[in-house]
Image 1: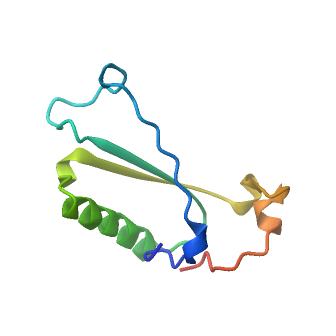
Image 2 (image 1 turned 180 degrees about the vertical axis):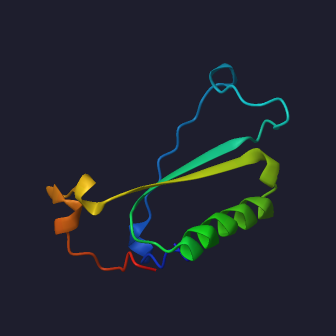
Length: 100
């Protein structure tokens, strides 16, 4: 929220919990191994995206999850590739800026 200047109501999460046998990961990671994938509109600066990633690492460290156990991927697509509230994303009136 802070790194991308989102308003508080734009918080969306989807968690996919897996059983241990379903989640194969490298031997040098702990049982806290975590993959974070974020889908977002194109338009953020490299600085904003790096800031987001760094904030995630800091936040996770504060709850005891080591950076070694975290992988983060940002997936950016054009607004026109999204369908939201019955229309294409590039037709939405947003209450926040994407270009941060």
